[in-house]
Length: 204
Image (tube, rainbow, N blue to C red; front, side, top):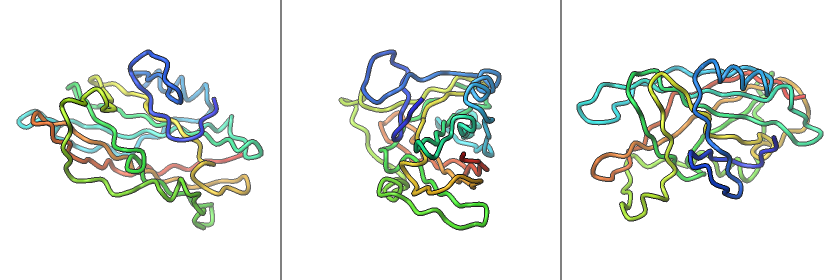
């Protein structure tokens, strides 16, 4: 599967140019997806988030899958897939920020040398507002991610070569920091930054 930039995955089974269909998956299915693409879903540490005032604290974590078997630098292909997992017994819903605020990302080689970013890579990781007002009249425009209890969701796919100036195959260290919004009852979007995921990858 070729991915060229952040591909947000939506629950809506409709045809939208550049978008993929969201899958809700538990750990077993996530492992099956990892087997299909090559590699293994690597999960970051969980974080406790109070989704609703007075409700139990929920645990959510970021998972990263790199397409080991399908990476091919000669074809500029180095696909990554991101998952969110809900370890709690409560339903959860998040809103995705704008593309430049969605994910902070960095890459270094096995010697620790930082890999230079493309213009798109430099734009990624813009500051996420602590709070932001949502317009109830435009609620259908919000990019929502729903997480069922004790379940995970595949929600984003992208190509590392669009964000980094990769010049040779080898082993690399990838750091990702996922940003999300929580939508409150008064239509306030509250920014949340998940614990960083650190992933060792090999690009062929």
